[in-house]
Image (cartoon, rainbow, N blue to C red):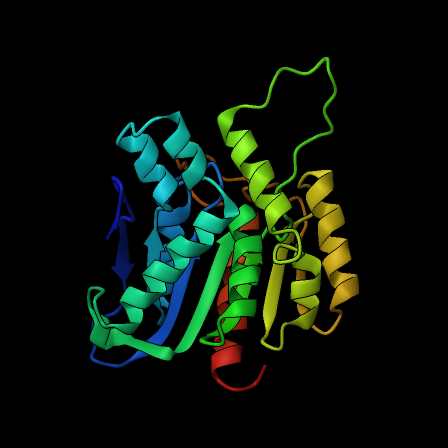
Length: 257
């Protein structure tokens, strides 16, 4: 899907082709990842086999790097704002019936799954788009942040500058804790118990902000649930994350959430 200025979104659809319209699940990778990273091909196949019209894609920043558009272009494509625009462009294509196997998609039942930073973007996006009916977040939910800096630190890179400016300009929009607390749709947060301290703390803030939502802690789970890239197969922690997420979405779309 072409976006202009050399940027594009690449992706794929996985689903059972049986003529029955299925809940749509859009899967968003983390900040340093891509749709073919590690566990994603396996995970998206599992969701498709469980009856979801599953869309996985690369954010446009991946195309900026791949096409060697330059450091400035990569920086501008790496912000949260651009991530949200990418997701909006993808959903626009979905609702226009322009994606493959579109007759298998029930766009009334639309869910998002975001890993790491894309978890936070998914929360923001859902708060702004009533078409989204459910969200799952894997090891995420926090606004991007950079450590405090002083004169002894090297200058910020172009990418860091773009991220800082984006967060500063959109401070209210990117207040994920407030957005999460206000969401009226079901949300599942799946958090590895051995993830980094910042994300564990953010997860606790979110639990306090919206105790009515759904939270799962994966014992022994790190940021990638013990999986690696290149992918060497699933892990107990990843299997738990997948199974809990599938059950959550099935419950939501059966009307029992």
